[in-house]
Image (cartoon, rainbow, N blue to C red):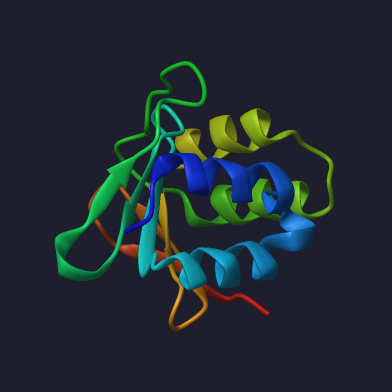
Amino acid sequence: MFTIGQIDELHARLGSAKTLPEYVRALKALGVERYDSYLTDGHSEYFGQGGHRVVSPAAHEVLSIAEVSQREAFLQHLRRHELRETTYLEMSRGLAQSGIEKWAVDTGRMTMTFFDKAGEEMLVEQII
């Protein structure tokens, strides 16, 4: 069973956009099947076999998530971050203002899915 300490160590080494595929593969090797990261405060929930679950502490101040999602604004904030024009916190603020509640990473399918507050899939990206 994985621990938050093991996840923190991996995140310290591989927790950047540039090393995302390696990070996800390393999480899978630990036994993480999926994790959800919430924009509201930056905490993540990691899930493994048999219902194993660990939760990270909040990573930033509490952000308000817009009630109605705005797909184009969301995609624009995401693109700006991919181009390294924004910090993680700036991206998080922009996604929250666009109505994104969380993203979920599936370590088996190697996908990252962004969800709005209503639980609708806004974007599914393959992690390569």
